[in-house]
Length: 124
Image (cartoon, rainbow, N blue to C red; front, side):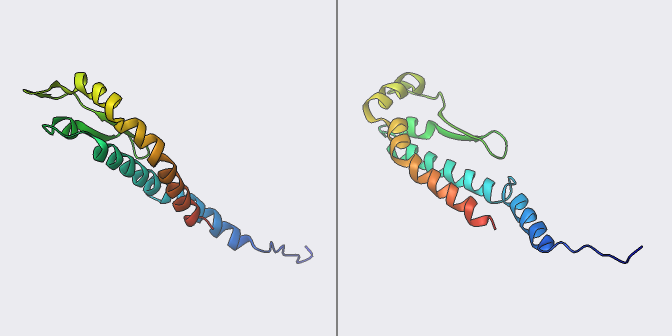
């Protein structure tokens, strides 16, 4: 053998960058934090826009995590003596107030931009 030892320049730095990217895109890394932050911001937008008369409709707003990276935000079906079932008057209030539509129009761009910035910030 000639004693030739190959040396790849930048290999350690490249490996460190790959490890940093791998950690960032894990559910417990920057990606998970970005998804949780965006979902919570949207939930708060809906909750804040929900009409409050008896409080039942607002109390019916739910955020449920289905895995580490997916949340479902919805109005659960509850009942109160004055307004009846939220499944009946919830859509009426959505048509009047637009808690979901307005949150989508007003809050999604900022929530998405914040999530993207958080992920990019964790990358090398």
